[in-house]
Structure formats: structure tokens, C-alpha cells
Image 1 (tube, rainbow, N blue to C red):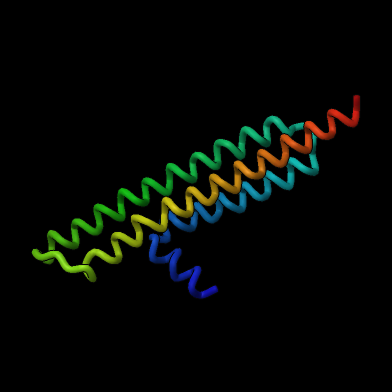
Image 2: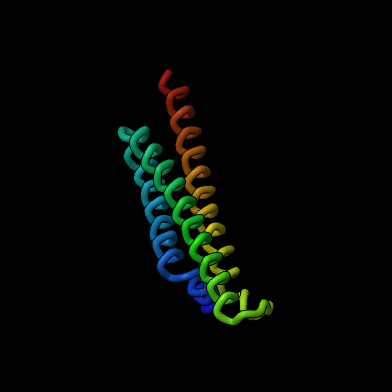
Length: 124
């Protein structure tokens, strides 16, 4: 557990924790979609939007991570692997988390659509 929190902190808490919150939102929307079948189209739409926003937020974090890495190189005057490590971690962790949320959202949508189609077939 400490390892996961450490990686999230490496990615920059300003970007990783909101993405984690978006993951919880997607999971809550998925549960709502299963429980409340009337508003499933709206739930799917919200899951799509939150998933795409998580990806965008992750790539925004990537941009800031790269800027941080290049600022560190400029301040030091020479390029060393250790110098770039923090900025590159931030540049990789944020998009990875955003894509993870996107994939979870898409899987949830696929399951909800499959359940809806199954329910529609049984009602016929």
C-alpha cells in the first residue's frame, strides 16, 4: 500500500489524487447504472466524460512533469539520469493513471450496455 501511495506522490499529488477521485466516481456511476436502470444512458454519458477527462488531466500532468524535468536540467547545467528521474516519473505516472481510469470507465460502459441488451431481450 505504501508503494502505491509513493508512486502516486511521485506522479505529483496535484494530478494523481484527482485522477484517483475520478476512478471512484466512475466506480460509483457504474454501481448507479446497475441499480438504477432508468437513467442508464445518462450514466453511460457521464462515465464517458469522466473517463476522457481523466486522460486529459493525466496528460496535463505529463506536460508539467516534462517541464519540471527540463527546468531541473537547465538549473543544473548538465544532464544526469538522477536529475531527470523525478520529472520523468511525473511524466509517466499521470497519463498511466488517467488511461487506467479511462479503461475502467469503458469496461463499465460495456458491461452496462450488455446488461441492458440482455434485459431488453428478456422483456420481448
